[in-house]
Length: 82
Image (cartoon, rainbow, N blue to C red; front, side, top):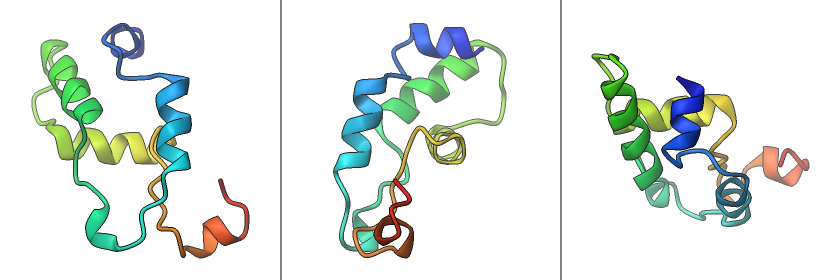
């Protein structure tokens, strides 16, 4: 499944670095899904996962460290938690 996600282009070091570099200021700017999470959800559905959508895929990407959407003023960012 992970190989399929990589083949689908949902996992990329360049995209990961870019996502970490762009810190959002207000909470409202944090998305519930992205183009990458939509692509991942579609790929997972093709692989037989039934209850997965873009928001669930985005949350999984957060949990796995593919998305770092700590706000600009977050203590984790200030402490060097990048």
